[in-house]
Image (tube, rainbow over all chains, first blue to last red; front, top):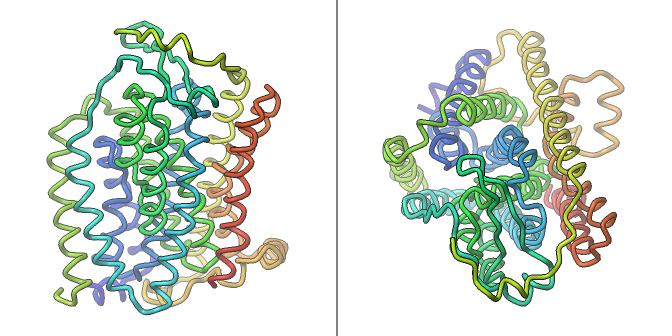
Length: 291
Length: 139
């Protein structure tokens, strides 16, 4: 397969990249998993890119998607900039460490280890995405010392319920730990890691679902900028691959968030998850030299 | 919804002005628009100027290797190099959330939140370290 795509006309190659990325961005947006979890393994398995170039492209994809869908969240004050910025103190160093690890493994000819780890992370996302708590308006819990000191509290107007919803961050130290881990995973594999970020925001910090989603979107962009900076400067962002993928994913994600919100449901997610699982297994088999 | 009595202990927060949200929304839209325009136009021009090229040639070597330093990028742009414009598109995409952090820094400082200003400044510096220190060291 790799050899077959390796010889195709560049115009066709670019057109196929846009098409696949558009589909991934659309479905990724509808399921809330993001397009990167499909695009990165597909680049390796179907389009024959090297592992670090696929990861570098993953960062570009996240940046485009996050900015395309994030503007509305910021405009509606759903993204909590205070909480997001505070948690970036953990995710950004995590992403820098992760991206450095990826380049180090590549330079050490340990791409196969990277492939196996990528497959394992993709498989780990599946149960995480199914177990989302999804409580719209959690009861207010007492803030911890850090939350109090920094004023990690806020309020948003819920349009569906037509009410103001107050919230305050709870258990920030463990959330910071999860965010650091999410940053390492994101930086190593070029994925947004939204599943892990939303987990920390919802379950640890007790934030409402919409605030968690919007704040995670903001954080994903900043974390990806950290990883992308390292990968671009290190020479692993190839614009001939990254540009069509960014264009396709951003437009797919934008369409998903605007036109088809009614389809964001469990059924789409259950259809999408087997695709991720199959790609994860394929990636692991490649890493083991069995595919 | 229930409200815990201890919520009364929550500190008084100085909310960011609405202006901050409006400008950040503008930063996102402008950054993404400019970047995608450069990348889209750059790809079309690249295909136009490389007829008969195959994917293998592109995958074998990164065409923007010489534009990964600030001086290389500036001279490439001045020379009208296609690769330099594609690199600029990627750089703008990366800089969009960085500018968002920078505007957060401005507004936290403006409302007098010293702790949040220090936190945001730390994040901003770390982002620059990744782009200008760690990445080039790993090249």
